[in-house]
Image (tube, rainbow over all chains, first blue to last red):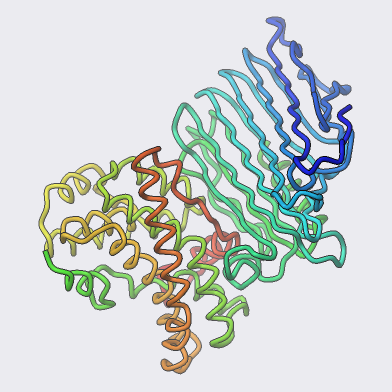
Length: 257
Length: 224
């Protein structure tokens, strides 16, 4: 475990996970390590794939921290990654923003499910998240991201979150959400969030979608499913609270997989 | 080359079909999120800093001579809503027709041949600006202004809003428009040096969701 030294420079830490197929339909985890506040642990899996849970060994990210998760699913692996609890972006002693970078790689005939718990942007925090997924042509991905603006009844912190998905070298999705005090104007207005406090995205990439991709659909008044310009779909949901976003995304996930 | 070409390109009467689109305002009005001038201003502000910034940066990058097909792909990735991709390409095709007749140029012919169903509108707009002898900032201004003037004009019709109030909204947004154009032009410059990933990707969840809802309506006043 990394210990905070009280220095304003913040904590650096990277968690690394690599999964590969064992050639007999199973998945092994040759790399599973974390130096820093995020520790990946192998957890019991229901099927042939491997399951990893990210456990936060300390609070944060705090201002000035820089956390990274690098996960790769290769050579026919099936890997599911979740987290033990929601991630709380907290204010720190440092005036610098905190950074949280997620780098996902999925090889041919491999599958990755990235299903962490919510990211909660606590009042006065400042966090920049980047999530990048790079997929081979026959890779599959299920990726969920949920942002909650403030704990119950609390004002939001500042949060910028960019999500980029590439498949076979081609850009499939690139979008950034910026919200909270100091964000560009109109973020809470009728074009962007309109007072909603929870946002969720679910990206599903499947090679089969090349032949048959689900069409656009409304999933309630403030959520929709849309096919992307490639074998992938995106579910976008906003709601007054995290529970309602999760319910919408769970239902979409059940229908689509 | 003439600076007045900017006025021709930015004119609401330039026959590029923009008047048929509300920029999401029709859905926002029906959903009750826009009920008057104050909401319209917040709507336009949010749109300006998200899709407005992205469109302006794409237009500026096209005006600087970046590969329009690569920019078209970047626009696809930044437009997750299928309904908005369709609308963007339809507008691009109409912009292409108008631009080729106003400022004939081989670069427009090449893009029209490569994307016969239409390239994304900001990319065509940027090429048109270039063909007209205008610069990246000019293209960004056209795109950013259109992104707020479209919903403002549409809301006058949708809510019978006083046109003076709608114009007041646009005038109050002008200083922010300057900032967005500067940011877009700087991002386009970075994209020339370091690739199109440098372009902004700001998104507006409710515009995305609303566009899918709007596309499913049996009857509507505007195409998007």
